[in-house]
Image 1 (cartoon, helix red, strand yellow):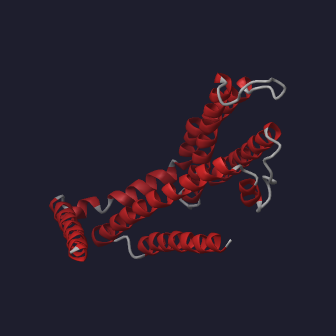
Image 2 (cartoon, one colour; image 1 turned 45 degrees about the vertical axis):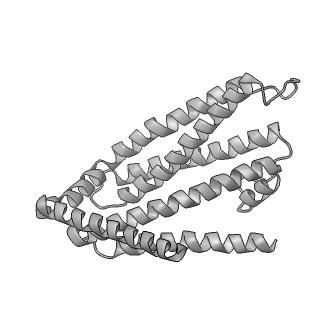
Length: 245
């Protein structure tokens, strides 16, 4: 009985997916997709020509707040010599909040910086060399901030190990965490894996529909599918490896 229910649920999901796909195709044709097909090239040309200003905008929106959050965290950081209960200390909670926000903004800027730099490598970019300078300077500063934050964490908690400029840092740092911290990392990692699997599937569907209507070719599908497969295989590889250990 359960097998029949499972089969019916799967068929229902596939039916809904087919209906959504057919509906989206109909809507795109109704919107005269030939007129919209030029939207992508025009948008890319706009981005490339004005990419330097987008790079500067990313610095203002993400990198500058990173400095502000980390400055606030440093300003209220608890003195190691004070005898306080860190779990209940208000200043320590504010420190964690500001540090989290600073690292979040810095990480987001790091990724966006690479995306914008990739777009800037184009002969249509009138500020090509300026884009390179902006990328190199602020990528260095972003990386330096990550190292300084790790050093500060290790200074506050000498039990935290790992050389932040080493390729083995993530492994060494994880091994130095206590069980509660490891559990939090594992839970966050699994939830991120599940979310990313769903997100990649949705992006793949969007790329497939775009291929049919916007003539994007097969490269986007190959890239998204390759990332999807890589994430899946890496998850099962490390799951089997950790089970042996």
